[in-house]
Amino acid sequence: MSDREYNVVLLGAPGAGKGTQAKMLSDQLAVPHISTGDILRGAVAEGTELGAKAKGYMDRGELVPDDLVIAIAGERLAQDDCARGFVLDGFPRTVPQAEALGRAMDELGREPLLVVNLAVEEDEIVRRLSGRRLCRDCDGIFHIDDEGVTDGGPCPDPDCEGELYQRSDDRPEAIRERLAVYREQTEPLIDYYSKRGVLVDVPGEGSPDEIAERLLPAVRDRS
Ligand code: ADP
Image (cartoon, rainbow, N blue to C red; front, side):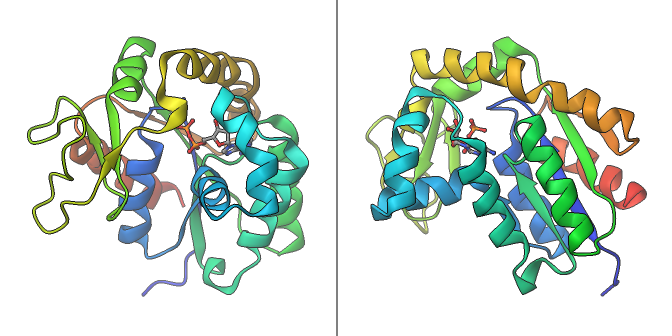
């Protein structure tokens, strides 16, 4: 295995496919997938103090305050399994979060980040989010238009057949709010990282496998 670091950040609107791509990329690079959204949803499901603080913001489609998210991400990135890199999904989402990440990487003496912007048109984003269904057992991500996926039906993976559900923030009002928050607070990061020369654009249209085939070489060639 190479000793190169793959310090990857996936940027993109909600529904751009960050979660799906981050999972595949982390398998391919053999580095952990770190999703602040998953960590926060886990905390809500377990009923921890963090979960109680985060739940209201998440259900409304708002961002959880920077100090909370920065603490969670900082703790996770300092763990041993991140020493050869990571695929960050959903962090940073604001300029103060990006600044905190930069400081943490410096303090840990790490190689520079590689930031990938997964670009997708807004109509497609709304279609993807409103049709998204997740499996409670295998963590699979599906779309209501996919073969074998029905509302209330089981996971289409025959080895799983777990319960499918819709995220509470994938309802229309919350989707609109998340997109507005994305444009105001997260989109400026495209400029922030582009000025630092670490941004690469990858078109996020097409099937998950097609996108993955563009993403892996973009990361391997630049890291
Ligand atoms: P998506 O990218 O589909 O919106 P995520 O799973 O990344 O979903 O995040 C879900 C929710 O968790 C966000 O809407 C927000 O409330 C919260 N969250 C996740 N990451 C962050 C972050 N870096 N900063 C603030 N809030 C966050």
